Each structure stands twice: as C-alpha cells, then as structure tokens.
Length: 405
Image 1: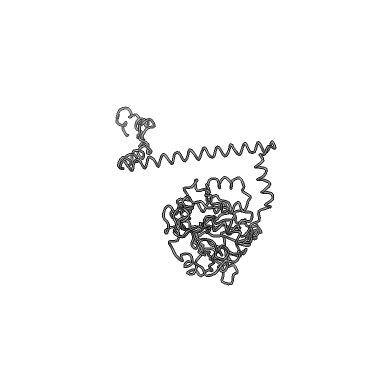
Image 2: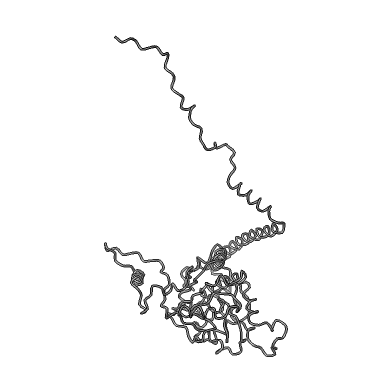
C-alpha cells in the first residue's frame, strides 16, 4: 500500500502577470522625445551658421523675397476673386460698363472660334545650349505662345511642346505650382518630336496599333462579351513624317502657305544668333523638310539681321491663318523699331543704332513678346493663363527662331 505523498508545504502562488509584464520598448506618451523636425531644423541652422556673412545675407534675402511672393500671389488671387464676384453681380443686375459692352460686342463680331487643322510643335531640345537668363526668357515666351493660341479666332488645333527637360522643366515646374501642366489643349513631352511619326508606316497608312487606337477613339470596339471598350481620353499626337516642316531661316525653301494636316516645328531656343544652322542641321539629320518664313520677300525694308522670339514666330503663323496674307501678318507682329527709317545712320550712336540682336535681347529678358507692332512689352503670368483655362474649359486652344532676309 502506497504511503501518503510527502508534505511539501502550501502550493506556491501563481506569478502576477501584471507585475512581471515586460515594459514597452517605445517611450511612454509623457516621455520627452525630441521630434525629428527639431533635429532637421537644428541641422539647417548649423549649416546656415557655417555660411559666410555675405552668403547668409543672400540666403535671408532670397527667403524674404520668396515669402513676399507668396503673400502677393495670395492677395492677387483674392483680388481677382473679388473682381469676378463684382462683375457677376453687375452682369446679373444688367449694369455692364460701356467698355465691357464694347468688348463683348467685338467678341461677337469676330464670330465663333474655328480651329485651323494644323499642328505647331515647339522643340525644347536645346536646354544645354542656353544660359540661365535665356532659359528664363524662353519659359516666358512659351507662356505667351499658349496665350496667343488660346485667344486666336482661328487657333491651331494642336499645340505640342517636346523635349522638355533639365533647367527648362525645372523652371516651368516652379512657375505658379507647375501651371503649364494644366494648360488646356497643350501637350508636353519629355521625348523629342520624332515620336510623332514613330509607329507610322512608310506608305502613310497607320500600323495595326494606330488602327486600333483610331477605332477606339471613334467610339470603341466590341469586346469578347459584346461590351464596348471605353474610349481613351487623349491619344498622343501622331503625324506622317512627310507632313512635318521645321521652320528655320537657314533653309533654302521659302514657306508660301500653311496647310491643314501639316506639322510646323519652331526651334525653342534663345541664343541671339550664336549657333549657325542649328535647326537646319537637325532637320537634315532627321530627314525632314525645312522652310523659312518669307520675310525677305514681303518686308524688304526690314533690317538685314534680326531675331524673332518663339511667341513672335508663332503669332506670325496665327496672323497668317486669320488673314491669309504674309505681309499683313508680318507687319502686325514685328515691332516697328525693327524697320529702317529715314535719317538712320550706319554705326550712329543712340538707341536707334542698336542691331537686331541687341534689340531682341532686350525684348526677351523677361520672356515676353511683342504684339501688334506697337513695341510695348507685355509680360504674361502663367497663373493668369491657368485662371483663364479654369473659367473657359470648353474653348479649343490653342526657339527663338532666327530669321534672315
């Protein structure tokens, strides 16, 4: 018979799990942990202290200017909103001012906007050949080009900017929160314009991929279950290589007319005539046609050498579409001071003795262009263009090119 089990005393109590629980690895909520932003601020402050006094002053000035710019932009937006509200109230009350009635009358007399079925490409593949000031000038000219097409009675049906990269892209991104990306009716490619005819067969007929895209655009194709595929929102621009024309003053062929269905390339470069045959060599290397504007034929009194900005060249094309007259188009765009006047002396002093390149350099400093031949410089704000695009979403839209007579 087995004996009783030995008496080992009372059973030991179970461990208190609450007391033995492991403390959390992260600090308690009331612990004083330094935030990451504070460390970053201290690092920036230390880096600033290492700068020379002159560099610190420059940095402080730049920060002050940037802050003031933000304040001005906010105030300007608020002012425009208030102006639009007041205008809407007057319009609802039938109290339009005389100049407003006249403006609306002129707009009505112009008739409906009818797009011209051709494409203009601005080739931005010259970023590495320009200085910082020239980049600044070019970006302003691009804004003006968009504005001209947007306000035209017969805008070009397609406005394409190709090869945007480097400093040009960085500056455009920094202008009004990259407002250019919201320009209505404008395409922006990082690739070069050769993409236009890539995928097109030599016979001029689209490849199978093109035909499928066209069918989709036309209203969709039937799927396996009889469901219609959703059409694409916007297909990239396409063009046959034979219909592409590079506009350059160095070409032996003179442009006589613009044709619907063709694509016209403007060199997007501000170089004040430093590079000779740049666009011509590019067109010849790629095997595309080149042509020059007929300035020498229609404007014999124009100075022998001159520089046209991108927006001036584009506006000449727009004016030709409206008038079908090269002489009228050229006279309405090129500033009067570029023409020879009686009593002008060769090599004389004063402002009248400046050559075309110097005048063009002054015109392009702020990136603006000249309109109507009156010689007044007009600066275009990309934010204003963005505001216009937001309020007129249904409207169709719409390098420095060197010209020699």
